[in-house]
Image (tube, rainbow, N blue to C red):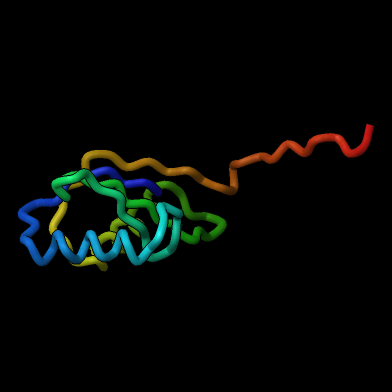
Length: 99
């Protein structure tokens, strides 16, 4: 899941916590806890997280899981856009072996 949004009324302590979380994560990968990237003013953000899915789970369950991961960080926010990539639907093409 990728959530693009903006922080709503983030105070200085919140900005410092987001900046520290970005530094501690050391990258922008998809993890179950989620990772932030943000603009210079720490007002807009992108939150990436991996949401484990059951066999019958769809986009709604993934969105709820991602919002729970975002809520766990405790910062007030407004969601602007949600994007789901269901890894179960990704097909990998293998290159031929040998000549």
